[in-house]
Image 1 (spheres, protein in one colour):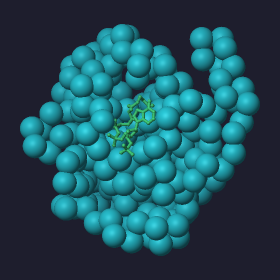
Image 2 (image 1 turned 180 degrees about the vertical axis):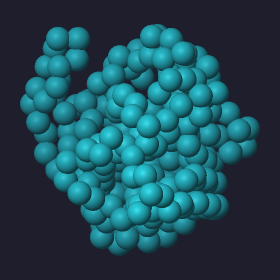
Image 3 (image 1 turned 45 degrees about the vertical axis):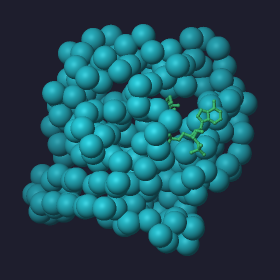
Length: 215
Ligand SMILES: CC(C)(COP(=O)(O)OP(=O)(O)OC[C@H]1O[C@@H](n2cnc3c(N)ncnc32)[C@H](O)[C@@H]1OP(=O)(O)O)[C@@H](O)C(=O)NCCC(=O)NCCS
């Protein structure tokens, strides 16, 4: 029997994290389509259509036994508008989660990224039993670096040419946050609201779906 997350609602003062739903596809597509200032920092080149996104968001909690993803919408609390997305992927080393995120351009610079990341760290360390979180960041992505450092991530190393984007090698920063560092350095952080529902399940696996491209 497996205990698994059925749904979640985690909110700070500015944003809420909740499961993605197919209805997020249209607003997310509008925020992402052709937005090179977002897409140039992601391994993923963005969705070809809203339908492609709807297909990904249909499974908010992907698990194929080797990799497990949580695909979470970032919503502005004041308006309920979708402002971005955060994916947390576990696989490889147990307890280590890879975090990826984006915020639509119209919503950037208002503290949404910082709070979404803190809510993600709270979720991982307080509720999912994670031991560490990490993020791979294209060298030069100063906004991402800033929000990670606000969240208490530290730069672990720089890896030259770690990935290829449009056939060009890209150097990446590897940022890491350990559970005990989070607890020590962000002891003040508390969500304004949190509601997580768990379910005991005989079937450990979700319906198979394609893994989502992470940040
Ligand atoms: C990274 C990202 C999620 C930040 O979201 P956001 O909502 O704008 O973040 P916040 O408003 O919480 O904070 C942004 C911080 O970056 C800083 N910043 C923004 N652009 C910057 C730049 N060009 N140089 C230096 N700092 C910059 C802001 O000043 C702010 O820091 P401060 O609070 O200390 O002043 C958003 O810029 C984004 O989606 N970028 C494209 C996709 C991406 O990079 N994803 C992450 C891949 S690893």
